[in-house]
Image: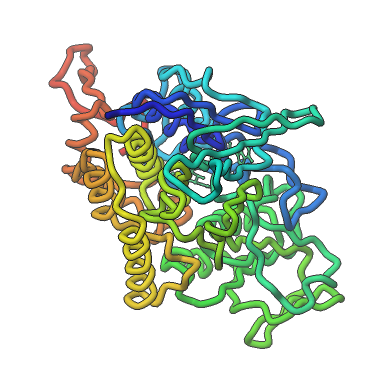
Length: 473
Ligand SMILES: Cc1cc2nc3c(=O)[nH]c(=O)nc-3n(C[C@H](O)[C@H](O)[C@H](O)COP(=O)(O)OP(=O)(O)OC[C@H]3O[C@@H](n4cnc5c(N)ncnc54)[C@H](O)[C@@H]3O)c2cc1C
């Protein structure tokens, strides 16, 4: 029998909103707690830069900097049945739009599915803990106490829910390296979480640590204003072929090995003995999972930067199905994967789907971790990565919630865009050519519009296609 539950979702980013929609569709009573004053999560750009604590978190959730444009093509970035089409007369119709365009899309999604009335804004969850049944012990009837603080109020409110879905994001708590001398280096040090605009680095010598997506983007942006930009990488394998090309093309961009130590006189000494005197260091070294409100009595651990144990990145076996996580998997197609997780959680809570036994779930987690560690030499902190395995995403959706497989043309678009990102980090967003398969797919879903070509004599020629909304093909 399908049953309805009272569910609390923590966070009103795209994951939390996807959860709200799926939970409601399945007949549950949903409340989404959101600490910010609006929905949108990361995409709610916050000009504040954690100035009180540039290496940590001083209450700012978003890590989006002013110039961020999407890394993923808009055609594969939306919720499955609510395409991220440019809006008529909208601000940014490009394939890789500016961050504000994605925020606009998330708000439209929330409005279109009337989710706003499920969201309590300005409400920070400060505690989620087990409401143990009389007699103690964890059982299927396990419920959760959720304590919230409303902005500007001292007292907290407490409520009991049948289930909690944690959709609080994963790009807020800076992960920092440990470097000799870091504490005594008196010049500017910040994490990319606190980077917003390049202006204040004008004519400076800047060291960017890390060369993944943010590191590349920030280094390329800074090279236009800074005197010198020095990129420090753990391993030369971290540097994509395209980024190596950029370094050789621009004479103020330089590549170095890991930092060995920082000296009080401003020197940054690299592992090969070379050094520069720098004005600033920006750590583009990623993020740690962080759920300070969650008390599971040690059942769920944030261990070596993974949330574990989680069955299929979603359910901790001992607390399933009443506690779940949506949005902690990395290198999956988002928000599509998070939407699938949301549907699965909603269906498991209603009883439409049944989870394997706790023992089977634990075995599956151990097997996943063993395979990840053995086959790829992947450290534990990366076992949440399913390394863009599109087949895994398809299988996940099909197996757990009857989600349709991703169309082949979209897979081709994803792979070609990642190849371009790797090879041409500076131009991939504006300079690309689609294959016939992709063009046909785009046309079939209304991304390309057919317009009659008007000849010089004013006569209409045969219809021809062009990229919707003036996007150059
Ligand atoms: C620089 C950058 C670029 C990116 N580029 C892309 C891209 O091109 N394409 C892409 O698909 N993804 C990109 N991402 C990833 C992006 O984070 C995801 O697309 C998406 O935002 C994840 O949504 P989410 O809802 O899981 O998390 P979030 O968007 O982080 O939302 C989590 C929400 O939870 C709330 N919350 C957290 N703790 C609490 C609490 N205690 N109480 C109440 N509310 C709480 C937060 O305020 C927030 O609103 C990028 C991320 C960054 C940082």
